[in-house]
Amino acid sequence: MNLLEEYYKSRDEEQRLLSQHGQVEYLTTMKYIRECLSCFSDPEILEVGAGTGRYSVALAKEGYSVTAVELVAHNLDVLRSKLDGTEPITAVQGNALDMSAFRDRSFDLTMLLGPMYHLYTFEDKKQALAEAVRVTKPGGYILVAYCMNEPTVIQYVFLSGHLSDVLKADALLTDDWHCKSEPKEIFELVRTEDIARLNAGFSFDRVKLVASDGAAHYMSDFIDNMDRETFAKWMEYHFAVCERQDLIGASNHTLDILKVRIRETF
Image 1 (cartoon, helix red, strand yellow):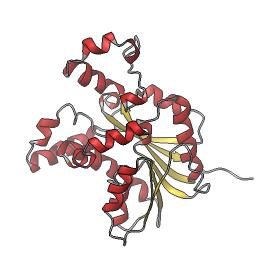
Image 2: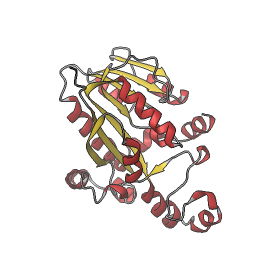
Image 3: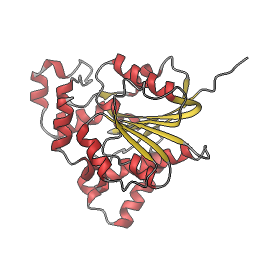
Image 4: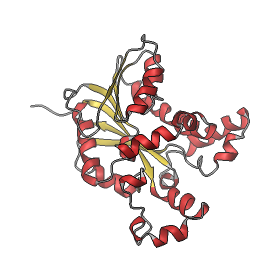
């Protein structure tokens, strides 16, 4: 908890999301959020790990009923500072591993757009997913974001020149170049097969697995300097390819779109 507090206090998460390359992830995630919401007439939305409210506040200002849960007090303060009191949003401090404050089958859309970045064991990730399934209505959607392994190897290890440091620290990489994370590394990194293993056994079906930002981080400086017309074309290209499964593992962030099965009763 202290490590997360220190990390988010020392970094301007708002600026990252508002940068042009950060907008790729935001616009992509909002595109698929809207697709899910279009299935409901008056949806109830839960965002677990709401951060500074980039998604929750935007949706609440559009009139959607939102419950925003955030672990880090600093992020929650930033989120609340964006509200004028007219938005249909409840913002509370809470933990993705324990959603006991919420009844079973309460929400049409449950979003975990940050918790999987900071859960370091398979058991904790399973628990967060189990809680999301429990509070989501049958036929509802769960959106889960992940940080992917390969972009970190390519960008941090090689492009940023940390190869020798990483090789000296035996605890950071497996023999097949999978990053091993602990709380001091802040972010947990996965591959698509890890996500598939995590999803196994739950009463939901995958709708789509999407590359949220694709090549945006590899090309961040270039994208930030694009004019509006070029950036619009970049987004057009990105939306055309972001569902291609051969490109998923190369994206810094992915979005797993899951639909809770409607339980049959006899």
